[in-house]
Image 1: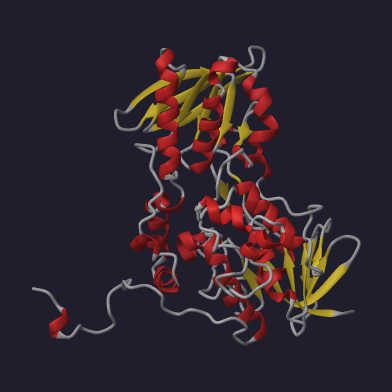
Image 2: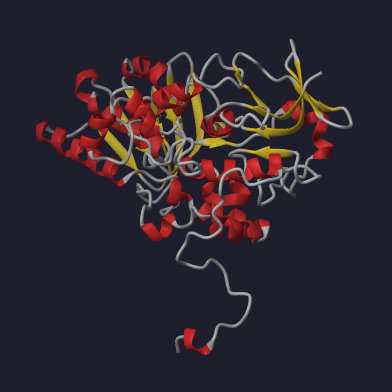
Length: 428
């Protein structure tokens, strides 16, 4: 049986980037397995006009290899859109445009096997065996890029709710209802609310938006904050105790799970314009927690139990449609069960991810993509950090630095110095 250097499981943007970075490297023998028939990134959220929240340089390859033929700029050139993108003068591609770019890259890669679902992974004493039902792939190493799954609060898991991941296929049905409630505090919640708000006069529904955040937080995008997406911050955050990392993960949500400032303003402008004709049939509830849900199938309605966190008051609200923009969660796939003893786990049952993204007991056999938010902070889901992580993973896979790995890019220093500073650097 052929033994690959590695098998990568799952083809989202991060493993797609790894496939692109290894496509023209014949000395690296890897294969990528994906259960879907082709690449499609968040199809349920391809709302007209929305953009990704990172600049075009945060494509699949550029930050690792600016000369790659799989760059976003080369894609634009090849499809005849480079000059229109230049004239547009925006660093932020449309989400549909980014998806089309990824599809363009995926269509050129020989190492991807679509329609291939991994059933289980075993180890034969020397290498990993990845079983798909119809075929078995043998490899010395693995890269897990299975992505995250929609998170649904236990209290809301009833009735015909719609998670934001499935919004567009359900949009027509939602708009046929007399009331719709969106729950969530991030970009997806804001995009869906704005999209539904645009048609509120046409369909006549009442639209509510509930968030437990005390306000509709804009995502912080100042440059010194952006330095937290850096190799230095990764190493600093990784070195902290688990309890501290988990606390920071909760406190830092608005740094990468907030709403773009432009969208917050666009929502207000839409509300203002619609209010010229009278009260807008919409309710915005910041600082309100969804505490319970009762679905009445006969009436076709939800009753929502809500808590105002600052006032400590409880109340209820009725709605026909419920959209849960409640985010995504990392998962441990069951196909790893036979090799669990080869994986490091933390005290809370999560992957204990090393700073080089490995999770195995040997330290250089199994690597993860976007399953390390609890160890590597906000850099885990960041598209712009994908090429950096892939450069590090490639070093772990091959034992050498295929693409230059930046060690220090930030002006600021994270953490206390290892020794006292010279007197002239200390302010009184």
